[in-house]
Length: 241
Image: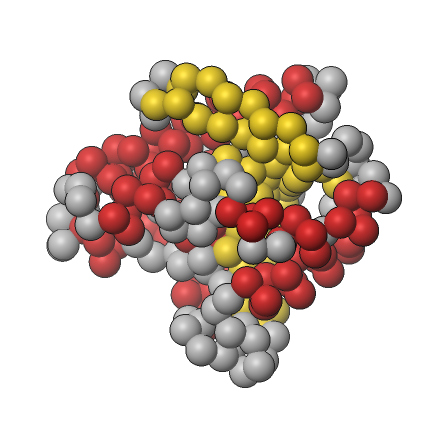
C-alpha cells in the first residue's frame, strides 16, 4: 500500500511531499540521494527489495524529497544559501515530518529509524545525531559525509551545526548522553566510486564521543550504486528494525 501526503512547509518554504509504503511496523525514514525526490527509492527498486519486510508488517517506509541535497549538488546556489537550507531541512524533518509519521502511526512517542545512501546517508546520520530524542538508529550506506568541499573555504555557522563531522567533536550535555544510547551503522562497498575513508572518519568521530557505531565493509564487488543498497538495506532492517 502506498500513500502520498503533500503540504506547504514553512521551514523550507515550498511544497513538500511524504510518501509511505506499508501499513504496520517500525517507521523507517528513507532519504533519497542528492537530487532525488520522495519516490526515487521506489523507481530504483529499493522499496521492492524491502517488500518481504513490508508484507510481514515489520516496517513502514517513508520518504521525502531531497530538498537540501538538490541545492548542494545543483551548483546554482551559494554555500551560505545551501548551508541555511540544510538547517531548514533539518527543522522540516524534526518538526513536520516527525509529526506526520507519528500521526500516521497513531503514536506520539514512537521512535523512528533513518536510512539512506550517498547524500541520503549524510541526512540519515545527521538526523539521528541532532535528534536522538526521536530517532534511534541510522543505517548510513556508502556515505558522502563531508560536504565542506562545497564551502569554497568559507565555514559558516549554519553548515557547522548541520555537519556531524564538524560539530560532534565538541558536543556535550544531554544530547550527547542520549546519542550514546543510539546506534549508527555505516555499511559501505569497496568498489567503484565508493569512499570507505568517509565512513571511517565518521566512525572515529562517533567513537571518540562514545556513540555506538559500526563500519561494515562489503568488499570490492559492491559499488556505489542501487544494487549495493538493495542488498544492504533489507539485511540491516531485518536485524535491527
